[in-house]
Image (cartoon, rainbow, N blue to C red; front, top):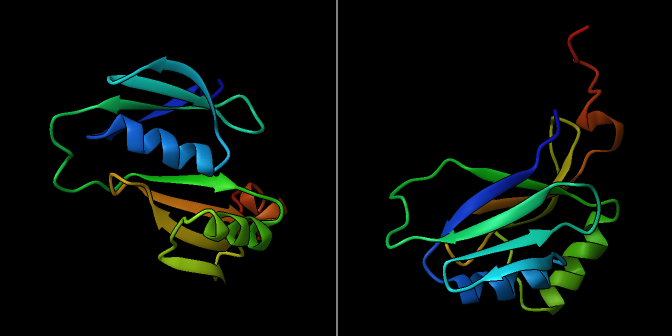
Length: 125
């Protein structure tokens, strides 16, 4: 099985497109103003955004994007005007994470985990 895509709600597709392009995603489907779809710079998964009238009052969805040079990427994104809630920080689960929200409040985490992403010391055997 392969993860094809994740779809997020948005009340403003145009703002979402600008934001995700700044993150480095490549727009591959543009059915604005109702739907767009992006390719990620690496891997096969895609990210879709669909128009909604109202955002969910509370969402626990968190999207993780891994980057080999996290600190440099965060600095590059800050220079493009992207604001972070948490700058790159080493976490007790052996990942380095930076946190931000997209224009619709969806939680995003940029991280670097290396081998610990799938093979932490506490992995079930």
